[in-house]
Length: 425
Image 1 (cartoon, rainbow, N blue to C red):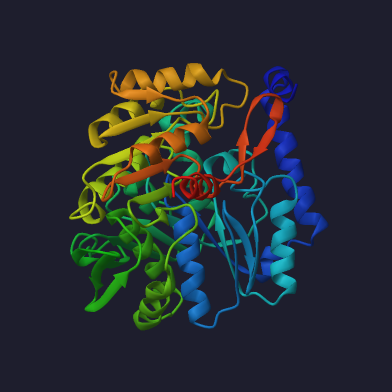
Image 2: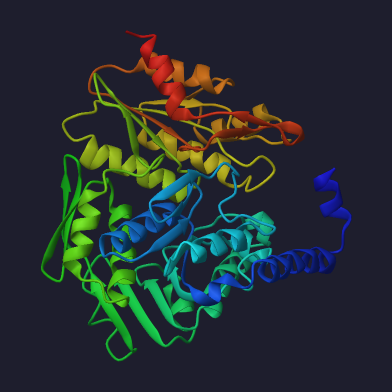
């Protein structure tokens, strides 16, 4: 019924509806962001991790900080799980959260900011001080009507934030974000970008001397060595984004180093659930680019000397959307993994077998199909041998599986892994 109403309602009425809700929330809670410095983080992937890293650095610096991401609401030292299955909450929830942060004495709030949230005006009436751009890959194309519209939605955050802009200058879309006016601009990348950006009024930092480590990755920024307890080059970018935000607020590299090196992991993001006799990892990767980065990391720094093969469990989340990426994800899985198991993953009102078959088509006959996600995980664990790596992607630490008629089934990939692993002993 909800989807039917959306289809038959004129777009201008839907836009007015969303705009009105944002205004109502701001009025109801007294425009709380006017007393806060709000940092909005946007990009296709890495938002949750970057929000967490920024919050940790600010906490280490003694800044009173709140944050909202797809996995949790955090105000000062208190946090609760985000069970909405919505990264950027709608209706009046964001304004309520900002009011609670204000009442708690927070100075900064870090918000994970999505293109769909922006398209529904959830960013309106929020006084963004800083906008952070991570990366841009094809995603939500059907919802936005193409990649350009998707990018334009992200750009709206930068148009809303007049003070500071933080941009990943290695991304091929960086110029669109750099061109938007701001009082202060920062760029970051995997190399020293100061020369490339000279004369553009952009302060730049770069990561140098990258080194894969058994428990993460090392790199240097302006002579300061960071030993990050997170895997993958993509997490170097997330760390750089957090460092650039911190530097723009006068926080030293030494404090950044202390905070980042205390970070042991992010729930559902390259999270190691089982260490022995084989490794089992749960990750949120649900786009072709993020999926490939996960597999590259496993075949590189983590798999080196450990994994004889990768066994993957995947599906394609979001029934009814981004159908183009399904065979692409199957193709990527077949390229990097020794065993491929394709299973159910948030089909909503679409036939789950139709989604699974589209993913399997890309795998070129290499994949095994197991409809039940628990059985798929069980199958993967049964195939694993010592030194193998099992990676389960798509849901991360999400607490629900979304099926037909708007039903939500309690779910947690990490919990299922532990339950099924205990049966193998």
